[in-house]
Amino acid sequence: MPTSNSPGETTAAASSKPKTITNPRRLLVLTPAPHSQDTIPPFLQTLTGSPVNNVPGDHDGDGSKGPATSSFAGYTTHTPLRIETKYYNADVPIWVDELPLSSPDKPDDSDEGGKKSQWSTEFLSDEARVVRDAIGAVVVCVQNPAPRNSDALPKTSAESVESEEVLQRPDVRALKATLATIGEVKSRIDEERGGLGEVPGLLVLMGSKTEKKTKKKEEEVPEVGEETDADAPPLSAAWWEDQLYDEGILGFEVVEWDPRSREPEQEKRNRFGEFEGMRRIREVLETHDWSGEPEEDHDSDSGGFDLEVNELEREMMGLKFAVQNGEDDRQEDPEKLVEEMDALVERMRAIKDMSADMPESQRRAFASKAIRDLMKDL
Image (cartoon, rainbow, N blue to C red; front, side, top):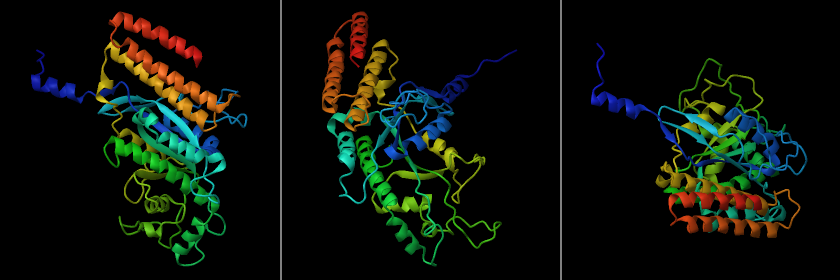
């Protein structure tokens, strides 16, 4: 005769059911503009299992490199990152943005057209708080500068000399300056969220993994802590971690990943016992709480409407940033487009305010029509 579960067993079973996060924060994927075509498509396809489509400016619509005007700035239509753990399930929206690569031979706060400075200024502005609030994690995808013949192998026994030589390379200096800009934005998000580490950060070095030559036999595995970061070869993950720390860029974990490698990486671990490559990237993202603000978890119709409005508002803010960064491919005056974006954002906020005191049935009808009218203007 079957027995019923005790109250304690029922409670335990219910508590073990994964929570569904209905409105998770976004995964912000950043890349220097010159790197975007080689980093974003393989990264997103491997991470989500879905190819890149409908790239802004990609007239072929197939994610190919296409015309020179194609850009990933403001790319928000990619398949969400599906995360399923024993604690929660979530479809994490992905937002890609790109920023110009810094020019190391110019003043630190400038580059071609001043776009880097403009990008950070806009992202750090008070008006962009709604955008920053929507970000759950930051992943920076870059092409790791390749070692040259002059610095691929140590020419002396002092690797510090080799490291200094690499640091003088223009491509390395430009990448460091760009990472400093991104680090400033992430620090602001962490600060607003409550402190360092509130928002996971990953620097993904794409390209062949930098290996260190060693005189030890292959079967001699170093003990944890035996090899220090000071022994790390230039351009390796450990070396980049040192560079970020020296520049005060905190809260980023550095992971090397070669999208062209055919070697299985499911069980590859570093000397600290951590997984490597894409396995580690997913592990970091899966151990994060993607929940938004408490009021975002409401399942009522009014809550659903608020989420829809907030999402559209964020989309328009992202489009505004793309225009201001000069990445929008429409042949119009950029300043005029920015003004139009500002006006649309204000109209969206007005819709929320005007419908706040209406009965629910009237509110949804009014809001639906207003949003449709607004979308026509987009």
